[in-house]
Image (cartoon, rainbow, N blue to C red; front, side, top):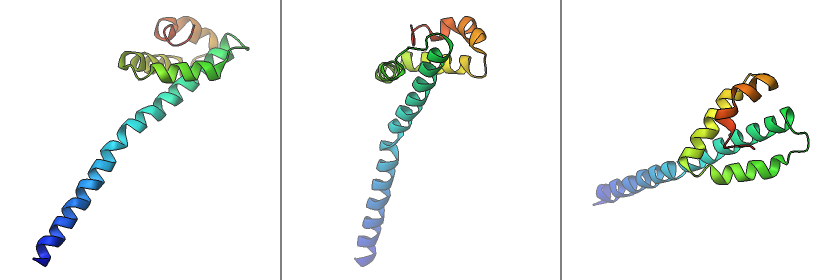
Length: 102
C-alpha cells in the first residue's frame, strides 16, 4: 500500500508540473508580442514622427496582437524592418506594417 501511495503522489506531482508548464506557454506569446510591438512603434517614431506616442502605439498593438492575423502581421512587419535603414524600411515594408502603425 505504501508503494501505491508513493506512485500516486509521484503521478500527481508530474501532472501538476505538466499543467504548470503548459499554462505558462501563452505568457511567452505575450512577451514576444510586447517586444515586437515596442520595436515596431519605436522604429516608426525614429524614422517618421519624432512626436509619435510609442506607449499608446505599443499598448494598442499588444491589445490587437491577441488576434492571430494581427500577430502574424506584427511578426511580418518586424521581420521586414529588422536591419534596414529608415528609408528602406519605410518604402520596403509599407505593406507589412500598414496595419500596425499609421
